[in-house]
Structures are given as C-alpha cells and as structure tokens.
Image (cartoon, rainbow, N blue to C red; front, side, top):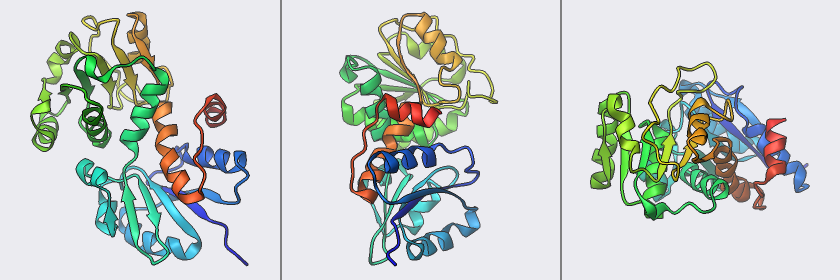
Length: 275
C-alpha cells in the first residue's frame, strides 16, 4: 500500500500551533491526499526524530521554537537565506535521506505586509524594530532585500541587539530600550517582534506619541489579533497589519514543495485557521 505524503510541525511545546489547522485546510481545499500533524519533540530527541520521519512517510516539516537554530546542525543542505538568518523553519526530506533546510519567515513577513498594506513603499524611510530574536533576524534580511534604507533596533537586552548589528552591519543601528520611542519619529515601517502584548505576556509599554500616521505598523503576535500595540497605532491613523498573515504566508513555500500545489492565502484561509 502506498503511503500518503506526510508533513508536520516540530516544536516543544507544540499544542498551541495553528500550523496543523492551516495545512489540513489547504490539503482539504485542494483535494490532496496527505496529512499534517503536530510533533512534540524535546531537544535530546531532535536528531533521532529527523532520522526517523522519512521512514514514516514524512516528506518535510516545519520547525518552531525551540528548535529553529539547532535544526541547522542536522541539515545536509542549507539555503543562503537560512544561513544568514541563522535559523530554519522549513525542512524538505529528500528521497536519498538528505535534509534540506530553509527559512521562510522573512518571505511570510513580506507577503503579509504587502497584502495588508498594498501601498507600502520600503524605500520611503527607516524601519523601526522592537526585539532582536530569530524573527527579527529574518525580518531584517527581508527588509534589507526589499530596499529599506535603514533599520533601527531596540531590544530589552542591548547585547542581543549589538549581536545583530555585528552580523548585519552598518544598515542596522541600535537604540536603548528606555529610549525606544525616539526611533519612531522618522520611521516609515514599525514592527514588534517581541512577545510583549501577547495574551498572557507583559504589556507593550513603549509610547507611540512620536509615531507618524503615515507609518505602516505590524506586530508578529497573533494572540490577540489586535494587540494593544496595533490598536494604539491605528488610533494614530497608521495602517496596521496583524501577525496572523506572517504565519499563513510563511507556510506557503513549504506546502508547495511538499504537496506540489501553491496554496492561496485569502479570507477563507484566515477564517479556517481562526475557527
């Protein structure tokens, strides 16, 4: 009996992930015989799990916290993009057993931003980013590729921000967290990549008083969809883009590689994932 193609998402914890709902919706929508499941994997079992999955019919996997960085050491081939970011979120298992690793977070971010703010012009001014984790790294690469002239970064731990500047060079400048509101004055694009404002997390307390109403503002948090940060930006007249779009769009390249169909991200997709 022929095994149906399988994919999944690897993380720890994993029960909160919306990826199974997203990919299962696409499989059903396009009439593809396949499966997508959540896989809770601890750090000590990561290598053995990656070795076992192809034999169980898996053709690929998404990777989420805390494995996005460590998974690179088990990949046989890593894209330039994933190497530059220093993390992978999409794996393809080749028929010869090799593992191909990519990072589609930056792609997902840009596709979501362009869908949610079609008039956005990356070259119109600096981008201000809150946070210096893995998502920030992917977003910096994507913004630089899009032609954003300057990226200003603030992180609660300055050393992490300095590490990003060391990796990405002069286009990135650092502002102390206590002065983070200062980086908003000339910002054309403002992005929160921290967990601040997420359900159950600490509040986002940086003042948006200097934020231009012409700025496009986005938050990668999607629980809640409208974070206090986005609500405050919208009250100032800014175009805002919620964090769900990045999750949906980053799944597109992997699904296409695994199942041979490029899925569409539209209102029906959003509704299915939020249901």
